Image (cartoon, rainbow, N blue to C red; front, side, top):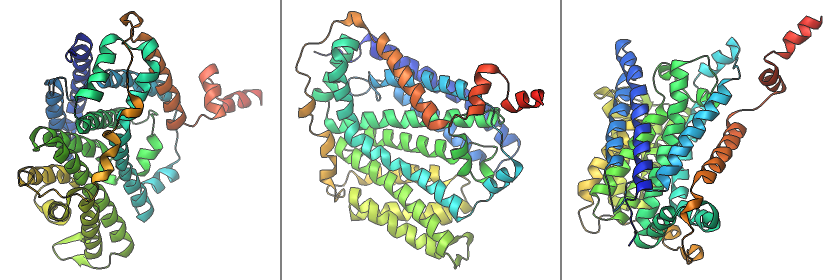
Amino acid sequence: MVNTLGMENIVFNSLLIVIVIAYILAMIPIVRRSFQNDYKNKYNDLLVLILSVLVGTFLAIPYNASFLIPYPWNFFLVVFTGAYLLVHLVVGYFPSKESKEAERVSDQFGLKKEGKRKLFHALAFGYYIAFLFGPLIMIGITYIESPFLITEEYYAMVYFLAYTMDPMWFGLSFLLFIYMGSFIVMMDAELVRLNWPNSNFPLKQTLKSVKREEEKNTLAAHPHMIMSWTFSAILFIYLAPDVRSAAFSIFGMITICIFGDMMAALAGRALGKHKWSFFKEKSIEGTAIGFFSGLWVGWLFLGGVLAFLGALIFILTDIVFPKFIKISDNSLNPLLITLVFLPLLQIPGILNPLLPIAFIGVEHFAPYRLNYTAPNSWYGTFPFVLLFFFIIIVIGLMIAYKFRKEQIFLLFTGKRKDDKERNVK
């Protein structure tokens, strides 16, 4: 019998909750400042704070013989948080300068910048890939490294996830792991940007290129969106009739929100010539294309009835609710779709996806069977912690920051090259 609530599981899940609490405490001054200055997005900031509290509460509660993010994934999140913080410290050492002209151009929000923003949102489709193949990759890593790096409890938990737990739930727990990792990356960037605006940080130029004017002094859209998806996914996991319904509903909700919003925004800017009389900021063309795009992609995961309702909710949050509810559609869409879907999922046959074969990736683990005895626990996970730190730091530096000769020179000498040249002259 596997001890699914062993000491390592409890310890690392507790550390994960401490990390969530730290982010909540860091958000409180930002939310307070948003209300004091009456910023346009103040209610968005308040909502992401509330959702973070709720998500942290659910993560702390035992579920399905373990936790929502079970060991070893809660361990990976704890290590990732520390490693990514170290990346921030290293990148923050380098100065970041931008000309006034470049800043002015960056602040102009046209079709090109809208396209970049929506393309950044569209990266959320990667969550689907993570759901399909993440568990298989995790088991493969365990198979390769178990003789050297993994404790007996680690091995037992992975064996439990792979053989005892429903494979759909295995994929969903990995999805929550990816959600929280994404939230950590986005929140780290936002906390540095809002508290130390002159500091450098990973993804600074990328995030700046997709930021709207009203987001300058408040949290950007990505933390709102990710936390809304996370909370919605948890509600589906707890309240859907079965794990299959939860999985298809989660991805149906995400695809409607992302694809509908992306197509509506791009079509509205490129083709929109007729404005709604009651909401001048949105075009009829953009709304129509967004509705049918959301309906089409939602149909793949949900079937006709739920896809139609999801696309309709998307339209309402896009052109009607902004008149009455001062919350971004990035946050509101997932929550409303979830609240409407949950009671309807109790109706037999209402969920009729066109892509049942799409989830085959998490239903077959034969190539990754772990049919050997668990390694001795004296090895511990310390070498793996060091390896994980090293990999994250290297990848983070390569992706987040382009080293230039001047900055490398500054790192080792504390002086700029142009200062040295001026001294020579």
